[in-house]
Length: 211
Image (cartoon, rainbow, N blue to C red; front, side, top):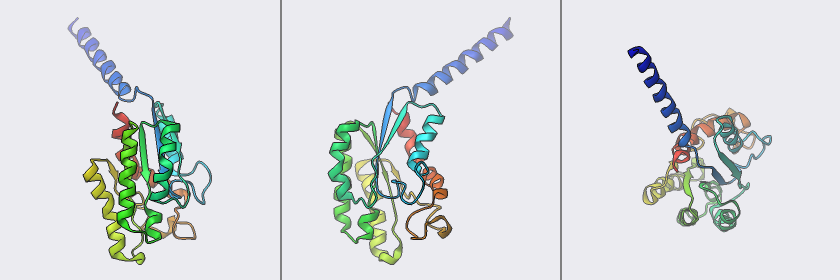
């Protein structure tokens, strides 16, 4: 009899744990990705980019989360800031992933301007009721090491100032391997995108679990 009661208790605990895990994702969510060519599947097959892989992972895990990819090749922080209000109004996201800044860097635009634009985008997203994940990028040092370092550091400063989660470097484990890039040496091959998702997922998952 005692053994039977213990089995029942263990079974009840397992049910509660399972229920808690399910409830963590119980509310339906929409993830809006606002990025540039690194998120827009530039030069690779449709469905091979990290955003599509994220969508598939969420579906495989049967999580009530939809993903909207509003990334545009060549996008700058200024362009993203301009487009964001309409995107927020249309999609009403619960989470906004902002992956911008690389094109600002490649064009040598002022870091202060990029920071101002990203800061405004975080504010607009929060005003619309969404949580934000910033995604950092580092441009090659041949664009000027001091400038490249300043641009990269900007993401950490914003994350700290705004108390916003940050995926520090989306190309970590990719940038160091030339064989993972397309002939232009700027855009990752499809084979690199699972690595990119691996760099972003640990910072996104805790946000997905919040109500």
